[in-house]
Image (cartoon, rainbow, N blue to C red; front, side, top):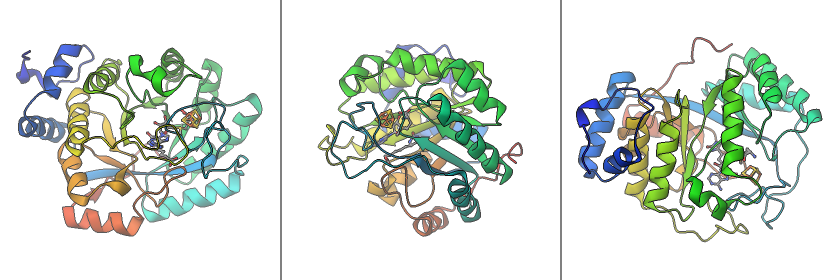
Length: 328
Ligand code: SAM
Ligand code: DTB
Ligand code: SF4
């Protein structure tokens, strides 16, 4: 399989699976060179955006996602907690802003929000925006009307991951379908929201699944503005607790492909950094990652603390990306 490498760097949604597979098969050093070249055409190569996560509603989720600490079906260390109150969330958002985050991402362990759930989340979005932060929420399946209500509250991004390929999805989740995920993404786009959508490596998927997932992401028109690439954080009690981690250089390869396929999107080196060396993270930045989760927790699991990330940025000469002018 060959492809016209001179077209790399253009923003297009007509990628073929063969093209994505050909990129995946490139010698690693060629791939990194192309990814870094594309990255430098669109971004400051030493700037990295920082988002802080908060679980606003933890545990007891009806869904059976095989990786998740929060499914009611698995016996994990995560218990059931009620939706946090707005003031608690705003205190955490203020602390995240003061620590240097520019975006605050609120996650709920729901299949989707019930009607009574939405109003407090809308208040959280309004309050976090008033602090001058960009807002992101991830609440599961949405109707078009719910997406419009979130947009009217001033939400900047909705996170909803594809997680893996369509054909492998049912090996990981059975309580909702890939089609449900795509429908929610369409509702979110129709409401005029920006999309954060990516996946997880280490679910037992093979290279074709990774290629299919990347192809799906890169053929959205427009592309998701933010593309989180997670490495599975194995959680005791879940079906995937014992899954072997993806090969480190395959993880780098997927980051590089995301960068080349979606040249203007922020590619986030997401969950899994606590288990990665600084050298591996540096390779991910070289491959075009330009966003991280920042703060000592993800949703229910750990993340490098801010002091460690500040030291990493200093060693690599990275700068935090400035807040987007639209925030606030
Ligand atoms: N319930 C909503 C949903 O599933 O869309 C929102 C919250 S859910 C925890 C958000 C995303 O977190 C998942 O789609 C998955 O990509 C990621 N995630 C959850 N558990 C993870 C784990 N153990 N390791 C890596 N990523 C994980
Ligand atoms: C995303 O792609 N990763 C984040 C966020 N979007 C919501 C979640 C990672 C969760 C890791 C496991 C946990 O902490 O529960
Ligand atoms: Fe529930 Fe989301 Fe976890 Fe799936 S990933 S079990 S929908 S919280």
